[in-house]
Amino acid sequence: MAKTALVTGASSGIGQAIASTLLAQGWQVIGLSRSAIQHEHPALRTYQVNISDATALQTLLAQLPVPQAVVHAAGMMQAAPLGELDLNASARLWQLHIAAAEQLANHYAPQMQPGGRMVLLGSRTSRGAAGRSQYVATKSAMVGMVRSWAAELAPRGVTANIVAPGATETPMLKQPGRESSPPKLPPIGRYIQPQEVAEVVNFLLSPAAAAITGQELVICGGASLL
Image (tube, rainbow, N blue to C red; front, side, top):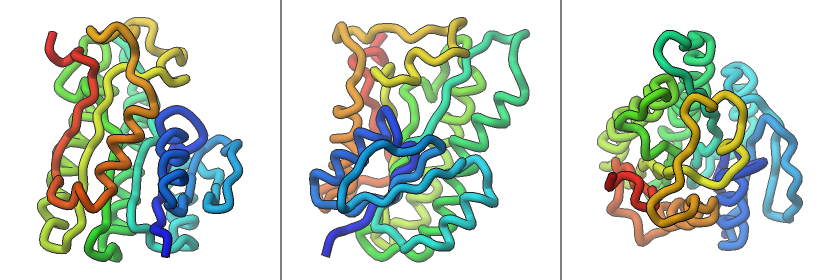
């Protein structure tokens, strides 16, 4: 029987690459996105929902089956230097990156069977980046949150990890709101590709990764070495 994975942010970028990769590996995929998902596959079910709306998300989760894997790939970027921080942006970042992930884990983790997987998309900037303090704050908080989940879930055979890419060639790379802190090309001379991130997520969902939990796997193209 095919395993089921719930993937947020499945309409574009890394989330779309993850959903497509898992479908190719024989998974059933439940794709959630604020935008309509323009992809058809017999093993794909899509739901258009704003996961930052806790009420709307909980209503949907109550109707869905318990997946073997939860992948929280939805994200947004906000960059601004001190003196120009938008406190509303901080709230939006926290709601999407942390609160929505917390809601997913709180709903599904207690019901997951041994072999269950939780993967959150973090950022290689989780340890700090000039001009991105609001974004970084959520990705840094994600590390402590996921390590805590991992410690709690390990005795049940359920893992929780973070995949933390550097600058990845997605629509978010060029979205407005990051002019004060533009992306930098990694030392490898190109941006990370969404498919490369998806393959790492795919590995973490596999039986071979059963002993990996509470980790932040960084895919930076050498940027973290500088």
